[in-house]
Amino acid sequence: MPPALPSYVQPLFVGTAMLFMGSLYYALSLVQRPSAKRVAIVALLALTAWSVLQLLLSSAGFYSGISEHPERLPLMVAPMIVTIVLLFSLPKSRAFIREIPLFESTLPHILRVPVEIAIHGFYLGGIAPEIMTYNGQNFDIVSGITAPIVAWWGVKMGNMDRIYLIIWHFLCLALLGNIVVTAILSTPTPFQQFGLEQPNVAIFMSPFVLLPSLIVPIVLFLHLAALLRLFSEKGA
Picture (cartoon, rainbow, N blue to C red):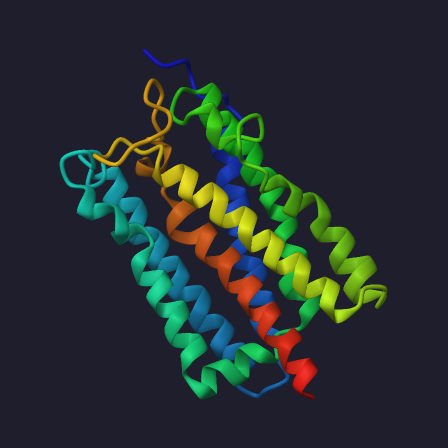
């Protein structure tokens, strides 16, 4: 019987997920276009609907038999990834994304700190392995700790050259990729490599299913949006 999940984990996680959605809405609404507010509202409604769907699926036990049905795992993330690819592929949406203010696409990464605290709580509660925490091989908390410095000192005050901002975003993407791969290889599927005694089952539970299905895609989108703007500035 796994130990009880720490009481702070669920409210911390839910609050962080809501802040991520609010941050994305705010960033989109600041684009200097007449359609910005409408786009931001549509994005918020779409993300809310997607989140509700994932919460319902996880609550109904759709992901609980993932060891027998590993093909269900991509359903958490694939639709969002496909959407991001399409948004960055279409000229009109890419032009819109390029205008997202750099400060507002950088600062929200500070929310990765409470995410990492929640993941550590998953480990303490017996629903994720230690390797997924900052005590293991998850260093994504560095992205959250450095985000306010890069956003305020580097972007807002203009103390970081464009090349260093690009490097920071790529390094943070690498840290994100590291924990995503670790989490996947820790799930109780035929290809599990880590956490054999205490596998990653947190992402199959409500509301923690929002980690792979909502938070990770938003983090990815914000990094890509910032990089698109930074590379566009070089062209300008």
